[in-house]
Image (cartoon, rainbow, N blue to C red; front, top):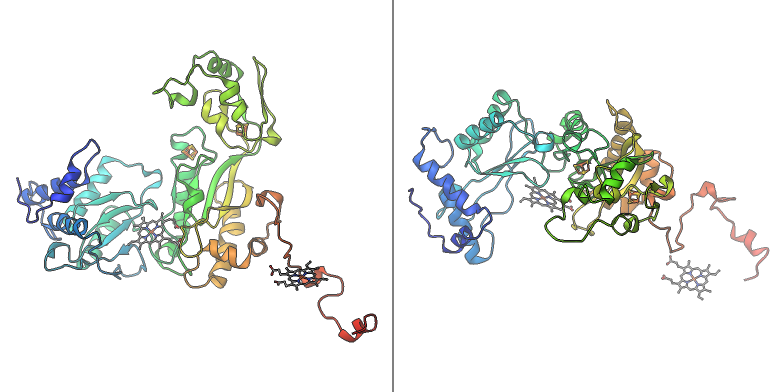
Length: 440
Ligand code: HEM
Ligand code: HEM
Ligand code: SF4
Ligand code: SF4
């Protein structure tokens, strides 16, 4: 058993309970580093895990962080990808005095081979702390903790030996991410992984070298279930959908009604909800009331269906998304800072997702960037620019026609702006002309 320098009574309590304990895991990594069975030539502090637990314990005691403000480090050629961090108690915890985070661009859908992960871990144990976050909220593989001199070394080995690049950070395109899509999900309306990968490759420059007023994120969901939460966590959200009929297998519907197939793929099997009642659980819950079940046949009135996914989620073996597939694009989602949280607002109801994706690049992504890069204020998210200059402006720059689907409800206030050329006679008026008809 390896020695621990720091007493950690508070965080030791987190080793109890059934959930996997991050404290136990970090302790195991410390023990492995101290024993060093593979004879690794450690390039970063051997005792970093011990000091990390020490500084964490101190933070639990004080109820405050012990990382200094900010930190600007990186690799040559790139403006982002590394989040610099320094401990504010470096004498007490010298092994985490530097503790930078490297963002490594994950493969789409987070599919790995053991061989690849072992290559990454061999590198990271040798040149970093051996600790990771699988994965960062944006999607990256997060290498947690190394020193400044190791950054170029890690980057060299990543790119030369593992053929792997860094992810994004700063005022740029961040690492795009996606749901697993067609690789494992029968609801997928486009190949999320391919599209996500192609956009990542297409915009490598925008990702590695910050050129924007602020951060910008893409996320790709194969259907409106939004498993990567594109609508809440990306400035441009691509969400799969379809335009034609939901495909209905009437025999399978009957099998659901007859109790042969459990609803929702068995998702609620752990409680007794009674026998499946198609009227109550599907038809009655359809948000638009566009379904009908007459006891032997299920009907869907396609023009009224909003593609909410409910019926398909409940009866995946009977109902399938249509064949005329594509995606909707929503813009402007962001966290609260500065002017309040936003989710994506619909800007393109339907667009085909087909290689080489020219239409999406040329009519959606790039016109929006051109506008925001010119007009966006320093540290203003796209969602905030849309609020400041108006949805109308966004439509002007993309060239999309305003249509009712872009709003939930029409405005209730009458503060309507008109363009001068829309108003007969324009804005230039002569007061003397007015006075001819109206005395003072
Ligand atoms: C000390 C480190 C970090 C700081 C100070 C930070 C700060 C912020 C701030 C201020 C926002 C809100 C942005 C806005 O609405 O204008 C935000 C959002 C977000 N950050 Fe971070 N962040 C950090 C690290 C990370 C990391 C490591 C990840 C994942 C790789 C990440 C992922 C996200 C996500 C997914 C959102 C929400 C979606 C969005 O509004 O973009 N952050 N972060
Ligand atoms: C032809 C007649 C009228 C004209 C040209 C007119 C014009 C205006 C203008 C230019 C403003 C300022 C709007 C702004 O904040 O930018 C205003 C505000 C206001 N007007 Fe009128 N107005 C008219 C009749 C009336 C009448 C009849 C009432 C009440 C019965 C009224 C009540 C108000 C109120 C309460 C505000 C303040 C609204 C606010 O800022 O929230 N106005 N009006
Ligand atoms: S978002 Fe839709 S397509 Fe993607 S994994 Fe989730 S359910 Fe499947
Ligand atoms: S997808 Fe939603 S709106 Fe469309 S028929 Fe099914 S439950 Fe109704």
